[in-house]
Length: 491
Image (cartoon, rainbow, N blue to C red; front, side, top):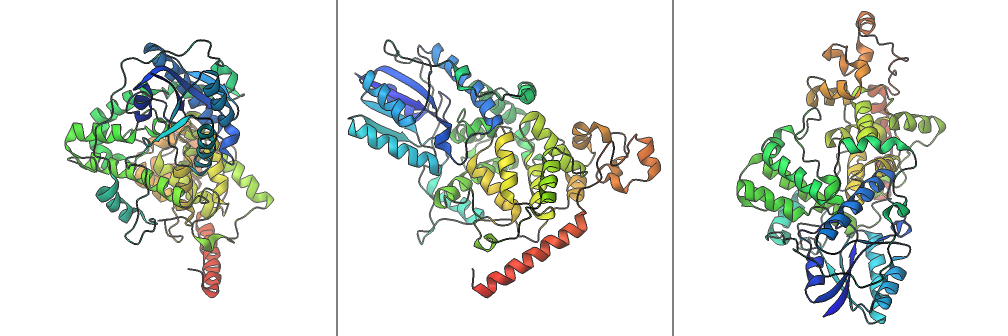
């Protein structure tokens, strides 16, 4: 019988947890620990919204562990030093943990394991955050994929796990005596300003909340996912992204739940909506694989032609950025999305693309400015997905939208919010406008604005950019960059 440490990070669950099951197999005592070490996540320390979720998720995990006869040990500081001290004090022989496929985490884990191995402690790493087995999906020539569709085909052929989730244990070995632990409040994860208080009305962090979300999605919404997923005025998406990011549920659990509900395989369910959702899970895998094989894409453009792209950084650009952040652009679908983000910590994916296109293309502001804002305000801020999404929208990433494809937010709103319900919900000051004017209030007649109680530039902003002229300017900037790169022989 042994003593083992189980190092929780972004696997805050008990079901489908291979590291947990391996840790308790021969253990007389188990030490489940979470170490708060934000400095080890540089340059992407967790943002305020993520920390709110983490605070509540740790409370939920501790409660679930206590039900099984254990509890969560909380510590802060250097992961390497905390684990080594814990292992030496309690004479532990093994460390078990789940792999995090991000550059900073991979380097940290290597340092921890090198030191523990020297001290005689064995390290055991498990891959349980992906549908694949954790290995990169490779092309026939050995290279990594740059485009999603061939990656998706390869994932189906060579990397998709075809297994059922592991059940949660029914009990856990006790902790040894005199284990030191901090109160979760000592981590100071909650934002110092109370802007997050509305989050409680929308989310239930923790494994129980994740399973409830999955059940509701499978029973009520997944069948219509393929037709409704682009509609922010509807509730057709799963809203499982934050639960997935923090590992409160695994991709395997979701895939298994879908195929158990509809039949088929983990890559193709016998339902159009369910199959489309499985494909979206694969986009998450693609983002992870991309960052793993190109570890600088969280900061640098994947497309080298954008290395010297003339992003705006003048004083006016800073003012425009602030108005974008506050949902004060004067473009309703954009402002609705930014206000949804601020009030709930989440934004519909279609709207994420629209607001990102406006910032990076029409406004000419560096995609990293948007990525940083999302990182701080999204409860589901995920380094791989955030980087892929922003580079895709800016046109400089792998499998990116062509640079000349610049979303028209008015047309997008007309198509995907056809009754204007999404805009009306988040921008009640515009709700009295006729629907045909709701998407572009600046086109409304004076009489229509007066009747709706709207004074542009007062009760609602005048657009901060002209959509047509800013589109032309963006295309000009791209033409210059592309011409220069062709002369230089850049591929």
